[in-house]
Length: 239
Image (cartoon, rainbow, N blue to C red; front, top):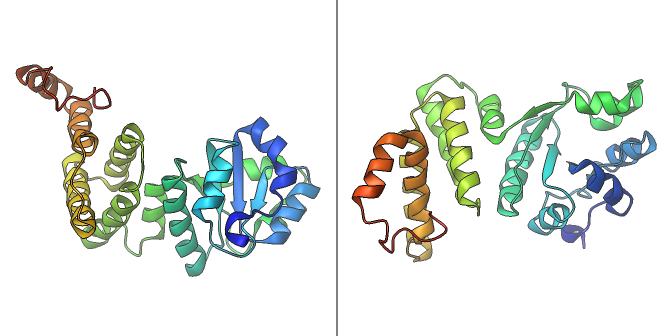
């Protein structure tokens, strides 16, 4: 089954475990050429978008990832979809940008030092990638659209601490206040919960509280002790 099979994984596992990094690409030739040049951490999705089964399988072997897709409109869409899938599996997606007109196959074949060439691939966080792919990243409307896309991805991030860090990074990359990111997150959370008919969990509410605590430590530390610390709101996860 293509949705659960990664081309080259059987050969790549030892190298992925050693490097604690895996590279996901779309093409068979990218994988074959990389392994022939001793870049053994590359696997392929066998022509399909990366699935949750793929991401969870890879997450068993390494925590760090690099998603390489074609540098065109279809590749950008695939990278965005793949990043959301990696988030859901507990990974922190990083998107690699290969110079226009090249792919990983050509990069490793033409480089005298394939490992150095792969190490020099430009790597973008999710927020950086969304900004790079935006039509007008300095415009207010486009920034708002980018922020909405980022928040939709973060909504499925299962770890609260990682979610807060990504929200802070998004605020910094977009040049917007953290409060704006929080408001977007709460709006998306409310919409998704309403669509599914679910209530908020204390941990989800706590995400915003902890984000504010990290952003405004003095004010929120005082607020914490003004509220009874024994209040059931402060579950062990939120503490």
